[in-house]
Image (cartoon, rainbow, N blue to C red):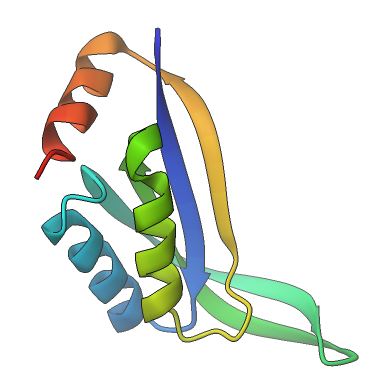
Length: 105
């Protein structure tokens, strides 16, 4: 097995999720991005509990592209404090090779 990175965020609108996904793939910061269906998130914000609909985006990338990808997500994100999670995961070697190939400019 080989390691790749999965970067995840959530946003408040499907078009925003689609835009973040497209920009990352277009810039070759991610080999692919998947926009997940609507979920309801409950969280503390400014001393109150809120519940809102959000869309998740998962980006598949390499370790050396994570920083640039996170910077791009943060720059295009509508939230004051965006959730940006980075997980290093084991991957089947052919898939990891594809991710590496697709994230090269």
